[in-house]
Length: 387
Image 1: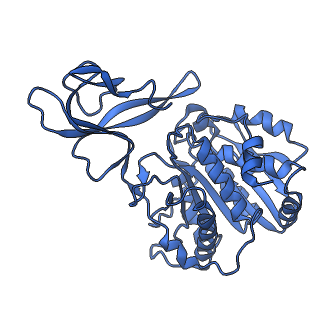
Image 2: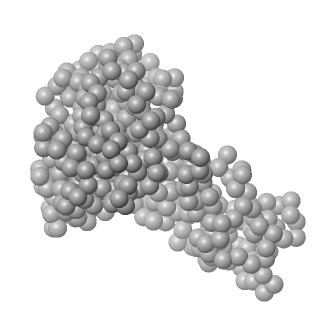
């Protein structure tokens, strides 16, 4: 069986969408208590449980954590896809057995359960946990550091989502991005950084088969307050994963699949780990740029004396009744030649109406854009844009 076929039939379909909380994963943990060990690593600032999953019996210890930022849930879905793969007995039995004999996984599926419930980046105190590595001012930060100190992992996986604004200079979105964080201000190529880079090179090589030209690399500016930089500074190879945008995949269901494949490649489960991987190839991965908008309408006019210009829309993610709504607003008006749109349309110098108005401003939330002279010509409709 090909891994793609296994995934399409068996991914963890009980986790879908962008809003993933502790209440969504607790039933899955209970159902799988015979497959892996589940314990409580600690509690959040509001007293919510922070689960810890332990799987495998090997000497190579891996520590991974997801939803350090509460509204970044794609990698949590991919974690449970990966755990479901490891726990099944029908396919890839030899590869899974070898992995579980070589590795022990320690996974915190939701480090920031308060932020996850609120659908915010920060925790309940408004603190970005990924800037709290030095102060350790929050209980969630202390929990992660305590597990790190106790486990003494050989690899750390820092799992995140990135916004739709990130793309690459080739005009494609950064669907998956990586970083081997710096260990000092000089951004020295320390032994741990090189190991992390080699792992990233391997994953990039594999992902190019699925999303050619859509893998990015973050800048490696050092920040001692960031968890990845701190662990790298301690000599632990640490890899930052960033799940990004794939065409029309605002719920990140395709991206989770690519993160899953990344996990398989990282551990050499479904393909041989090459001995000739060169860490220097890490620097050939295109660097992330903030060069994308959700929607760009080019070559349009508005108002009586309007000159030809372009407008861009960007979505805000708003939690409404336990569901994430994507609310479009005007972000830029201008030539926008330096930006790409995940969807672009050409107005062909037509005059437009935005929500039936001739004039509009940056920041306005909108529903529909039509041709002023022909209202049947719709350039944007928020009710169908994401379909």
